[in-house]
Length: 235
Ligand SMILES: [Zn+2]
Image 1 (cartoon, rainbow, N blue to C red):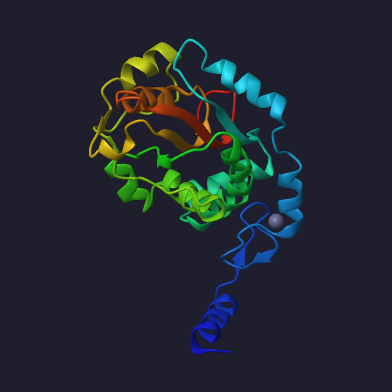
Image 2 (image 1 turned 180 degrees about the vertical axis):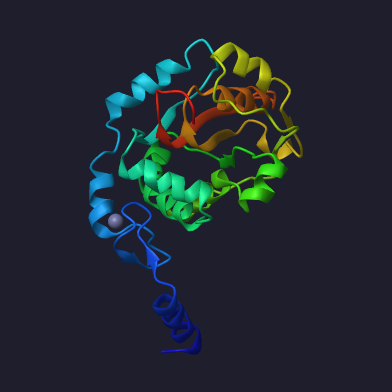
């Protein structure tokens, strides 16, 4: 055992990390969900027919190649607890891990609908400083590890902080989102298929606004991916 492994072993013993879903079983940092919770989570994965419903949600709103979400998001589930830990309890490894799991499936989709790059939905810099990371970037990192698709995080930028989205209807949200994104260094994205990635799709208004910004790049094709999809408001 080398010194690094020994040190990590000591850290695990001193500060055991509990499962992000059940908060009972101890886990290793690189696998933040225990096997029991993981098998329960994997059993809830979306079936292909559900993706048709998800795609219909964006019909007439934006031109997309496809929309994929890995899991439905419901209250009181293992997934809700896990995503809460990921976003609000400084556990960025959860996003990388869930991204790696989803990336295996994405790799198979990629064989039929090749994607040139993963684009994380940018977080406003104030929020990123407070959280310590952009959750979409961590998911992209995991997706990239298991799919081999590169991440481009220097193309799409967020201009201003947006107000909280919780109590706005879709039209209000859309107006609020207009002009919130901008592009830089887009030459390499011309005529490419980009996969815009976020953690959760609720109304899809933020992805839609960012997507319209990306579609200003000449000949670009666009798809959306999220770890989870919820039909209720208040993501
Ligand atoms: Zn667990």
